Image (cartoon, rainbow, N blue to C red; front, side):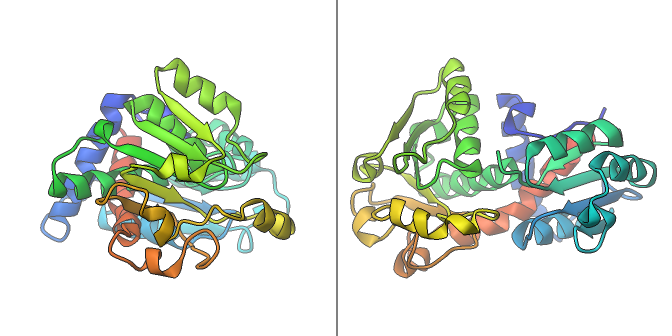
Length: 308
């Protein structure tokens, strides 16, 4: 049995934890095991948007699992010239064994799922970024286990900035795992109500505020992202004005718990959404978080191919 990974909710809470456990195992055993569960498998990595960490982690993940990664970008394929997703999907479905896709609207991802007949993993859409959240959760879990063995449910997670695809996936994670989540967003940039409702219907307690100091006070994990995401470049000046005062910096971090860590999915605009001293400082978990993209990608691929 194979699986699609459109969003975190494609995993049950129990399976999500199992995938994280597998990612931890794969991290610990990297370079020490000869297991190659994707031997003989061809995996197409479709990128309609720019990528560094996602592309690198997925290429390495597929290769280390024994498969072959085939990268398709918009500039290097007919999709960039307007070929319908369904046409590309049907061709891929006859030549490879699995697909990851980074695209704009999730409708394109869903079309790839429908017409390829293969397991498809969401490597980012404008609506969500679930693979990144899996990496974030692994990094946070490992850090606090070493620190004082606190569980994810005991931690206060905060999001500072745009109610974007990352914020939506954090909201979904809170609904699945029962996380304590607070979000600080400028007025007019709150996350979609539909994501909040679904998570709250699962029992999640989520606070959305315009007061960044209130949200970060006592927090264990402080996450942020660029103020202007891919495809929003024309909004840059308006966004910089709206997000004034929403920078994660050393003054703000003094309000958080003394053991608090900072996450950023990268790339970072130093001096805008995060200060240089925080990004490079002792509270930054950013580089562990980036590394976790590899281990969680491996675990998700194994799950998607029905091998968990």
